[in-house]
Length: 489
Ligand SMILES: Cc1cc2nc3c(=O)[nH]c(=O)nc-3n(C[C@H](O)[C@H](O)[C@H](O)COP(=O)(O)OP(=O)(O)OC[C@H]3O[C@@H](n4cnc5c(N)ncnc54)[C@H](O)[C@@H]3O)c2cc1C
Image (cartoon, rainbow, N blue to C red):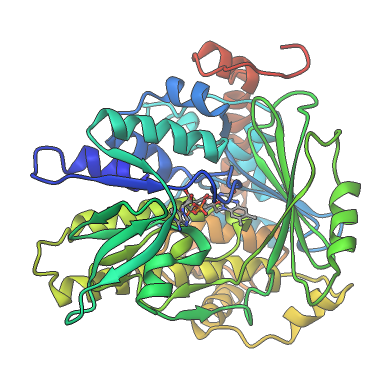
């Protein structure tokens, strides 16, 4: 992603980009669910959606279904879109709270087009007509991240990036400044540069091994530290959403692609053995495995300095939270966008570097808080892990948010929050954290007027979903189908 974006955005400058990758080491090999922002990335590079979808076996994604998080048996969808229309500057969920207090039992989901479309397995792109219900959402992709990387590699090579196969075995720093000067490959090839982007994954070859940036370990808040991933065969219609099912010591993902379903169990090794985690994963699969399960270990947290001297760490080299809300590829995109915004000259201005580190640090913190919310906004206490979260001291930024929400459904606005208010509403309400009171401004609408309005919104959502094509059919019709190994395909 970095090589492709820099090649496209720095075209015309006297800059040469070399991409070093090692087939021997390979990539982490997981990462299938994305966020809507990736569309802006692809668009900025002029990538054709249908071509990208065919190349990566992609499906569309309208949100994430969370099962068993608030209580066992619960389910809700965190959609890429809002719930109902804002009226008099007051968000719809506030009116819904009033309705609920007056005895109405409609689900907040019934006011969300992407939730109902996802539940019914339907998809279309958002309408350009801003008055239409079909315009009230965003969408992302579920794709094979390895194939996406290949696709972007070829995109980058066509724009002049030279790709070198080989393993970096030595990093040479300037004796005086400590700046990285060269990297040396196994075969002795030396690659010199002014700027190095460390995309070496968890190992952080330049940022940590060479420059010792340091790592803020966030395991106290996000203790999951292992994952087992396994693909299964597609079985049935492709769902336009990712599923995350809470387990006793972590959670399990299910991500439908065109040619397979990606599955994995993310768990905390203090609360479950690897063998038990494996057995839970297998027991939760809904189709035969296509390969041996792969095991991964990680420590949640972030590099203290993402950019140090002339090295910028992007991707897993910069840090890792956990994949519960599909945020890693988005953090790569943020790293690239922020880097382009303060792209350095050879002077490497300290103020720009500090600003970059501050901004990316905030991106990580906001995501950490949002992920942690899923574990603490819960009534579960049926295992050691869930009891651990009951007694956890939260970051102040999250405690304040939860308190403001509880009192009257107020959402404190973050600077640089990736997840906007509707996402927080989805998780709070989806996990049964209903505010004690609602915004007093909703009293301007009588309960009869409100009931009529709510029923009208529900009817519009229903009608719009009925007009929406089935997801698999839409992929085919829009030219995005690769092989579609789906029953009935
Ligand atoms: C369990 C799990 C699930 C995930 N799910 C999602 C998800 O659903 N959505 C999402 O957005 N993200 C997800 N991620 C994160 C996602 O996988 C990564 O963000 C993404 O794959 C990018 O990784 P990377 O390129 O930073 O690192 P890697 O994939 O590890 O790539 C590192 C690269 O550096 C090269 N390299 C390393 N060392 C050397 C060396 N010495 N010499 C030469 N080359 C070297 C490797 O060959 C490789 O090309 C998940 C991660 C995990 C662990």
